[in-house]
Amino acid sequence: MKRTIVLLVMALLISGCAGAESERSSGGEEAASTSQGASSTSSTVRIAASDGESVEVAVEVANDTQEMAQGLMGRTALAGDAGMLFVYPDERELSFWMKDTLIPLSIAFMDAEGRIVDIRDMKAMDDEPPHYTSAEPARYALEVNKGFFAERGVEVGDMARLPG
Figure 1 (cartoon, rainbow, N blue to C red):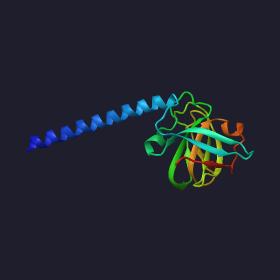
Figure 2: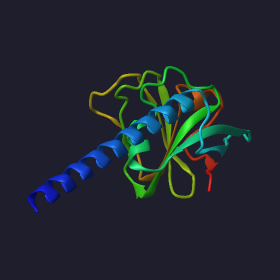
Figure 3: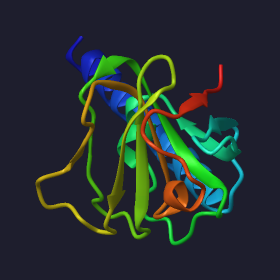
Figure 4: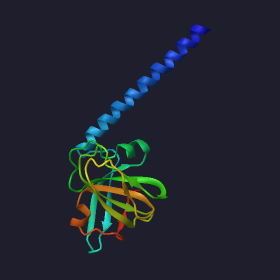
């Protein structure tokens, strides 16, 4: 009986480790492919800028805790018209930091209707408080290269059409 329990525990440990290893491997491959601009969870955000222009951003969608925690960490470049869209289940105060993020970014916080409620510029590798916190409750956050919003006339109050 004791031997059976030991064998069962060892089998569970081995299968658990193998599963975790395959998750790490697939995550690493996905991170490598997304840093090249390809992603299986890609979509487009369209922003109606105040000046009447339509601004499109090809986005990777981060909608689970693992994707959100990873964000754009470790990336050395981001295409000029690309970004990452963070999708939360509800509106709340959102706070971001730049730990291990090598690219300076701008972030737009949006409410549940897609209205931009705040835009902030963020420094690369900035993991010291205070962090970058939304001025109002937000459900979405869109990270792009620093200066992207300003260069395209995107301002607080503009509306974004978000995927799905």
